[in-house]
Image (cartoon, rainbow, N blue to C red; front, side, top):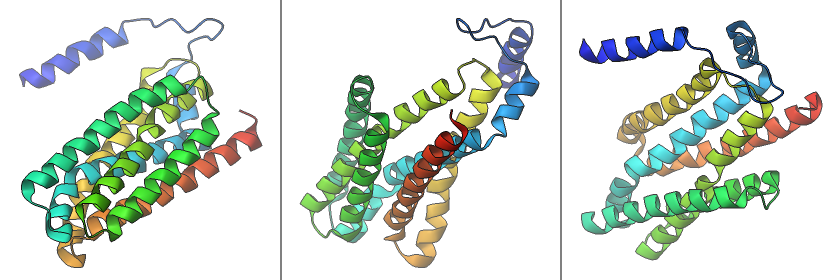
Length: 223
């Protein structure tokens, strides 16, 4: 009950607060924010983050078991490789933020998607520790830049600040991050442990397809 009271208090504070818009951009109403949330661009962004978070967290949640059962690594080595995955993901994300002002975003997005796809293929087919390490490196390096790029694109496409709009998109992303690893357990019980890498592989292909759709929708709408 106490945990429910705390967000309720902040909900009241939010309802009574006024959030100024950015310079030259007025704050829009909740009705306008909901209308934008139903736009094709917002739906595509939400789907992209849904699948992307699902891919990242599925790899993080199931890679040690995959390496132990499929590659034959020891539990210690598998967990160490998982730590390297998080290290590559974290440092790659920091590096991507520094690269954003210097490189073309579309090129960086597709390069990242292809790198993650290549890493999934390597990890899916490898039978040794070196292949597993390279697969984790390419996957983390590819996944690292997608989130900051998409977050910046959302802020540029919808320049006003409205918590309900942005929270809606990122809540769907977190939902994907929670549902995908849980669903993989059921899939692995029927199809075997390789499916815990095979499904993120398909998810990475889906992310690349959604990137293409977002670019196409942006050119069609001119936004």
